Image (cartoon, rainbow, N blue to C red):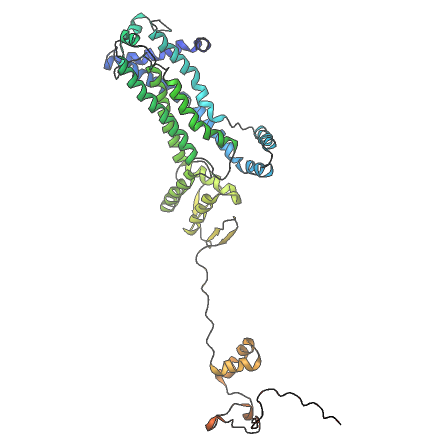
Length: 429
């Protein structure tokens, strides 16, 4: 650790100066030797650093969005080389190089904070060792050693001996209870932040090595904080817990207002956006316009949530424009099907029941061989008399069930079998 401290020694003086300036402000309110004055000075240092890192965070978001635009290409590479993992990795790296993207861009804020973290660790370790550092002189050193946060000295560690803790004016129980609680909170906040990212703000339609890396970090980081946290001074635990809480809140804001396309967070956001747009009849703010503009520009490449959003606007009589605005549409409602092709919206046309034919029409249908002839003869049979000869018309049956036309049908002779008769064989001469 001494080698690492010497590497980051160039930033030790600026970090100590910032802490002293905040301490002078909070010391006037809570007292210069209180844990509130020194603890809030460390918290303010974290907030100042994270505010300075906001441009880097915006760059990280843009790099992440660039990675998301490559998801279809990544999916094609995976399907093409699904049996060759080495070739798949080579093609992925080639794609990153051609597009200028970096899958490790999410680690930029952590890497940027590292110098400040090690500088603060070096400052607090010097306070515990009773050594002056940077702009912290003997008077400030004595004041920092008297500061306690919930009974634990600012420079105490979980692994310190009882004698060393007593020199700092505390007990080993207070130190270990406070540090254990802070380590648990620090690990939990890191785990929740990473889990929130994986469950809500990740495109679940594509499995990439980047997603596997993020899933691994979800479990690795909390374990690392728990293992190394027992060697961190209380002041460093305050620093790291504060930055974890800041990261968690910052990520919740991004997920709520600018989610990843294809994620569960995007589906929830588009539902809220659809309600607002249909209520007001327009998009409000640059953020909403930017998201609608990106959805319109995708065309047939929209995912299910985006297609559902566009269809909802169409059903409400609205149309999304290429510039991100929404206008009223007077055209007929057109929605997209699941494959992205346009289809008619609204209910399907009702099926018309065929007209019921009269008895004479049905008889005419049977006589002429089909419904088409019945349709042609329907007006004639229903409105005019039939032109058929009288002898062709079926007459009323006489009593006893006999036919009126006696010559038309022959009766079966007695003793003769009904039905088709077998031809007689010629007589032999």
